[in-house]
Image (cartoon, rainbow, N blue to C red; front, side, top):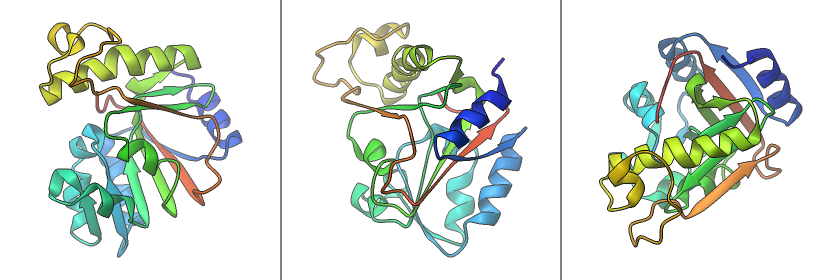
Amino acid sequence: MANLDALRTNLEKHGFHTVYFPTAKEAADYLDGKLDARTIGMGGSVTIQQMGLMERLAAHNTFYSHWAGATHEQAAGAEVYLCSVNGLAETGELINIDGTGNRVASTIYGHKEVYFVVGMNKVAPTYDQALWRARNIASPKNAQRLGVKTPCAAKGDKCYDCDSPQRICRALTVLWRKPNAIPYAEVVLVGEPLGL
């Protein structure tokens, strides 16, 4: 069980605003109420999809996601960006692994606001454990979801650091602190398992 107080303290110390909701519904209600008449971009996020946020936010915002027919460039040009993480350390580091690079790029630069929506299943006690989770739990599950031909997709058990042409792990970002070019960044913590 994650130490929520330590996690929030460390994230705040690193420049990230934090909120916590026991359920995904409460978190979705919060974001739906907070984000109105904005342009919002999203990369691939099973978490956001599971919460029904794409449909809710698209009803009263301009919403860009390649999952909804938009381009990566449209999402990258939005005022607000929504995503999750592959691993989050209680010590305050946010870790993401990406194949295309659109998602990790948008967490660093180009948006006025970035919201990281994170189920507590993605939290690990240390940086090393969060990185291990990103590589050995989230990445194989994502490879299986995408149906790529990689060892981790075939076996579903760990990262093989493969050289497959369909490898989805091509870029790794670690946010040690809130990037200077992002004026506002918030981590929305959810007390339920979400995403991969």
